Image 1 (cartoon, one colour):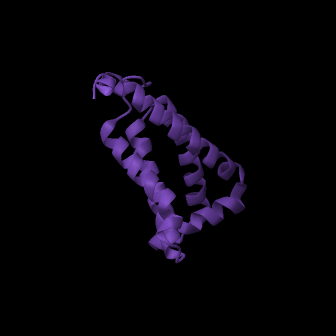
Image 2 (cartoon, rainbow, N blue to C red):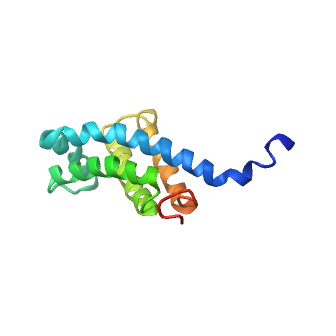
Amino acid sequence: MALFANLGNYKNFGLLVMRAGLGVMMILHGLPALQGGPAAWRETGQAMGHLHIYFFPVFWGFMSAVTMTVGGLFCILGLWFRLVCILMVINFAVAAASHFAAGESILKASHAIELVFAFFGLIFLGAGSISVDKS
C-alpha cells in the first residue's frame, strides 16, 4: 500500500518509540518496588525459589527492582541496550514462572510472557541509531 511504503525509512524512530514506551513503563513498575524496602524485596526475591534458588531472596528482589528501574532508564537512553534486554528477559521469565508455580492460568502470566517476547526481540534489533550507544 502506497500510504505505508516509506515507513521503513523511520525504523530508528520506531525503535525509539518502543524503547521509550517500554522504558517508562518499566520505571513506573520498578520504582515502587525499589522504594518498598527489604520486606518487599524479600517477597519479590522469593520467586527465585521456583527456580530452586532459595538463598538471598532480599538480594534477588532488590536486583529485580533495580533491573526494572535503572534498566528502564537505560532502555529509554539506548545505553547498554542489549544487556538491559537480556536482564529484562530473565526478570520476566522468572515472573512468568512464578505465576505458573502459583497455579495461575496463562492469562495471569500473559503480561510477563509478552514482555519476555518483546525484550527478546529487541535483543536482536538493538537500540537503533537514535540512542546514546548509536549501535
